[in-house]
Structure formats: C-alpha cells, structure tokens
Length: 231
Image (cartoon, rainbow, N blue to C red; front, side, top):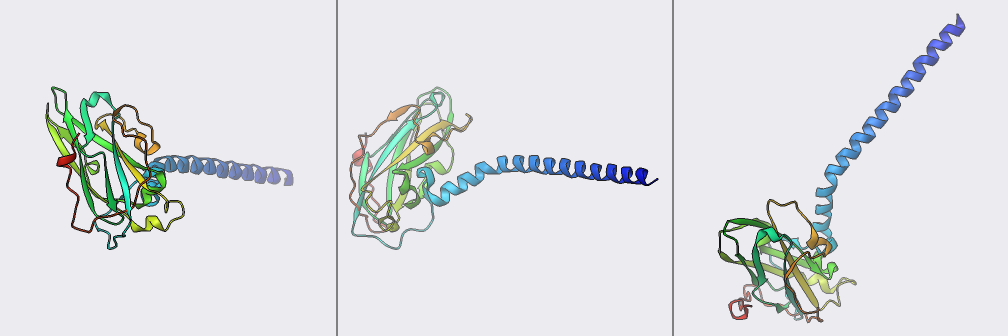
C-alpha cells in the first residue's frame, strides 16, 4: 500500500517537474521572440540617444550658446539603390560655421526615370563620436520624398553642432565633420548602410576629410550661400 502511495506521489512530482520545465521553455522561447522584435527599435533608440554609429540627433530648439570657435562640416551623397534612378548631390561641398550656430544648407535630387519614384534617406556623420552633438532641426531625411519623371528638387537641412562637443574628451579635438546621406527606393528593403558607413554606390564623393576649425554663425543668421556654391 505504501509503495503504491509513494509511486503515485513520485509520478505526480515528476509530472509537476515536467510541467515546470515545459513552462520555462515556453517562457524562454516567448521572451526570445519578444526580444527579437524589440531589438530593432531599442537599438534605433539607443543610437538616437547616444549618437552611436554616427547617428545624428533631432531637435526643435536652437542652441542658446554660440562659441567663438569654428568647425568645418562637409557633405556627402550616395545612392544605395540603382532602381531609384536619381541623381543626388549637395549644393555645397562644405561650410565653416561657429559651434552652436544654426546653419542651413541643401542637397539636390533629380529623377532620371520616366516614372515617379519615392526615396528615403539614411544618414550618419563621421567621426562617429560627433553624432551625439550633431543636431538637425529640419531635414529631408525625416520623411519620404517623391519625384515625378524628370523632376528636380532642392532639399534643405537645418542643423547646429552642440557646444558640448568641445568638452567631451573623445570629440574636443574634432575639426571636421562629414554629414553623409544615402538614398534608397522607399519600397525596397531597408538597408542601414549609412549607419554602418558602407556606401553601395557613390554618386558624389568628397575629398579626404581635413581638420576643421570651430566657428558658428549667430542664431537667425543662417548661411544661405547655397545658390552660389552649386555643383
């Protein structure tokens, strides 16, 4: 009788252990799936907050401080998807601005195809450590852009370099920042080459980065010599 009871208890204990093990495996599997889905937005948020990988910042407020120190900002353009059929380039190759100064430049794009196409741009800056201090107030990269057959468009970028860049050990000696955009067809699978720094097809390539100085224009005195520096 006692042996039967012991066996019954043992069987029940074994079933409970198996049930706990099955539940643990299920919870682990479910957790891994949730983590996989969350990893992309979490990584994106991490890059935006820290500037990791050269990810720039987005803001609506201009800097309240303008330093009497200048920095050079260069502009690079790339097409990552030949199906897009665009010509894409900066209207200025570089500007020298005061750190903290709000500045406006522009890129141009032209659809060379006989059908409308829609593009979306990825972006980053180099050196990558400067990403946390490069603030955009207006940018064509915030939305998708559609061009009709043969249509050309000028696309502005309004930005400033955070004065805190001169205080961080890893960025205080940076003299030149290169802002790079890569356009893809909006319907094509997203490829974050701009973040990784891999350029698939270069349409407009800049000369090697030089040391920058750090000067910034006063707020409201946006640089708009874009028209005079085309090409």
